[in-house]
Length: 250
Image (cartoon, rainbow, N blue to C red; front, side, top):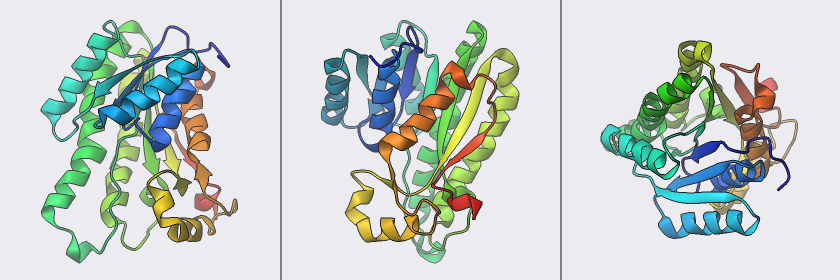
């Protein structure tokens, strides 16, 4: 293992069966955390778990249905059951990012986006942060987007849901920070994953607007998430960290 700075800690990562979530799960395991890989696809989840175990890490898959508050609470209970009653790190990574004109947005899509991007992290924090606070420590990292800070045509629904998550990050830092729970977010720019690689031209075009001039890799985003989750970021609370190649700086 590359580092043991998170040895003995349990980390729950949602949307961890691919992309940024999988890279984050692997990076947390490299630091010694016991990682719970949460997602809908058991086969992909077990693949991530297997890769972690092959490198000597500890991991397990937990099925995640994040459509409503009851299902989210069930995930929290399942995670606690698998991890011996504690979760020390929560990474709210699962999300959907549909693009399109406001006038064409069906109410069912609106509700689905807010259910996964806002309601799910809200109730996971409601279930898991109090236990962290009782133990006197923990870390929560929310995965946001530059579309929450900048106006992009066609991204009103997606961007507004993540803007809500940015505010929740600060509100939770105020609520749980005094009891030792750090809450932060990463505000992600264009990133190459299995999904976004299918729209390579659009990905490169968006990335070209930033000083870095290229998309991020999932591992680069994961490195920022792990930094915020680990104790080396002990004095970082309520931050929304841009990890966007400089896009929001220009």
